[in-house]
Length: 203
Image 1 (cartoon, one colour):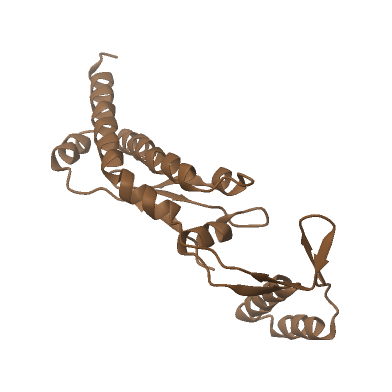
Image 2 (cartoon, rainbow, N blue to C red):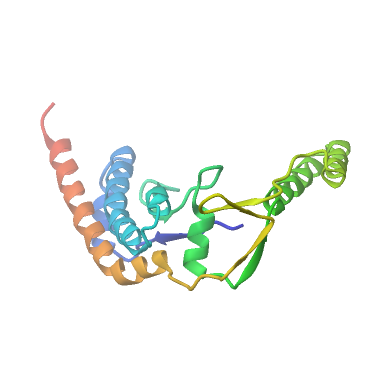
């Protein structure tokens, strides 16, 4: 399942670009990263506020990351984490919604086993991939046989009613993008001024 995130890329600030270019690369990179982080926090806080608070885990899982392919370039991205405890898959449902569907116990484990077999085949371990598929078919790998519902209730399958589109990330970016850009511009300029003064101080 593809990751879902909101990213902020800012272009066209020519005056700031020229001032930033006067700084050494390492200093330039630091100033840019700090400004991107400040701008990204605007989107991150808005996205957290847009997520329904049931357990609070999905909102708490949101992360802000800053990526810089060059000292004077960068992107601030907000998204959920993957892995065993990650909530990126829930965030995807909140962002795009989902149609009513049936959830069957064991399907997730079977899907993970198929993905593992495919990965083994891709790296040349075809015999291991065949053995894994055979064990899944023959029941040699344990799969969940029931889904636990709230309370002492277990079911082989449940009908999910679907979820409406909430788009917490898209809304955060659309509603707060201009403010994030203003925060970025102010933070970048403040960082340039501070570092320029520091560099001009006599040793």
